[in-house]
Image 1 (cartoon, rainbow, N blue to C red):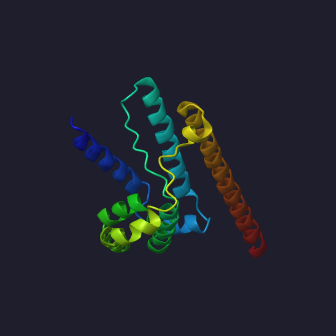
Image 2: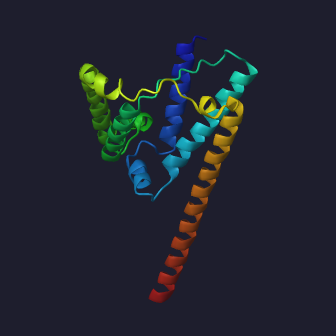
Image 3: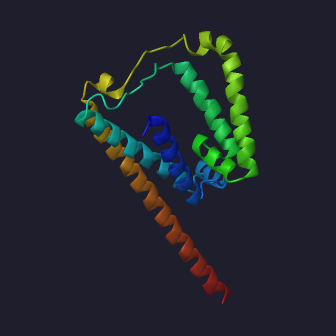
Length: 195
């Protein structure tokens, strides 16, 4: 099976899983940004942990099987891109993966967000020659990785980072359980007062 077909099949399976999990709704991202619902954040962090450990382990066991494409660290470009990306996510209520799920699910806001994302992409392509001197040629630190900065083996860095992120996911789950328990207690007290 070619890589393109494998990518298409895994993409469809992943998209279907996101749809079944309810990620076609923009409210999940909005509630996450307001720190009311950590579902999206936990899914993203879990995906990072799985991808980080899986790709690093595969590279260690089968050198050359993974082709890490490390991009140069353009500091101002990353800051500006993160600001635009975050603003778009906050306004639309979708991230790049979930906007496709929302649009494919026929959600009007998902389709509108996808059109906006494609329009922004085309605008960036045309604006790139003007943006390049400011955002891509200034503060260019080259291809920087955590293993190259720390001098530690990639596997060790990946495992430590994965453990930290998994700890964050566990902490977020505990916060959600505490909130749910508090809400249940509040409802019981409210019900007792009204009766």
